[in-house]
Image 1 (tube, rainbow, N blue to C red):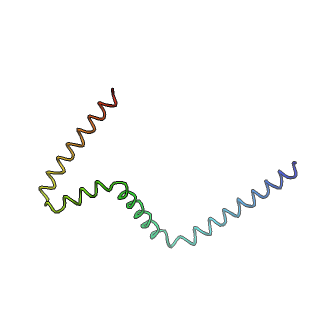
Image 2 (tube, rainbow, N blue to C red):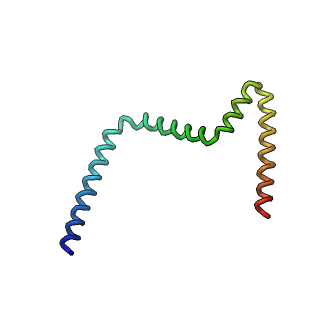
Length: 95
């Protein structure tokens, strides 16, 4: 059994060394792409935000044609309603 365990340990060491070498090579190969891949990653994060907040973005898009001042008034109302909802939730959870 010891011989088998030694062989497995040697194989594991060899594979770990090979993986480290491959990671280093891949990192060097992808170095010129880091900036572009970072932009793509940020785009995917933004897309995830948009997907999870569709109602918020739809409401904002609906307010755009109203003009600056009317939009500001609606945003104030929305903020007030949001605050009331938070207070009511906290009261209901406290019960």
